[in-house]
Length: 245
Image (cartoon, rainbow, N blue to C red):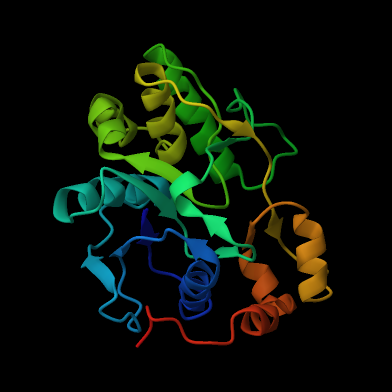
């Protein structure tokens, strides 16, 4: 299974997030195909990665992510079905990417609550639901801090909504937009599951694994880099991967 990373500018850690994510998929990924990175060039990728350098077109994160996913399908030989990843996803258990489930958190929110954090992200989820409802699609929340299934077919089916989403305030959340469209035309099974994003009060590698439970992957907040996570990632993944120079 091929994996696509969409990489933007602005890493607060010199893009070491991507470095350790690549080490994690090499160490624990089973049936791992080609690796693609589209967007920003971090400067340390080997020829084992297909890099497509594209400047951001929009001032909104989700619009750039969606645009780059579409450009990757246009400009590379990535498989018809592939996995979308982010630079801050780290695997700690053997994971078969050929048989990776589709996970769902429930339904997309209708409104933003006064107590909601990450209001920009939450607004994009609300905008995504409105757009999907407008066209009669389901509105499941497929946004995950781990690999998410993508396909050329989903992008083709969602073309009209993709173009309209660029006009929304925050832009549609790409995985939710594409997978809900695909679900209507080609229903698939999914598993309802929350995910793990670590922020602070981390007491070591074993603490990370305990917080994960049966989950195979975790993500981090920027703030957690200064809370010990950088040291723990080096402990988990000390060896350079074939994807690095």
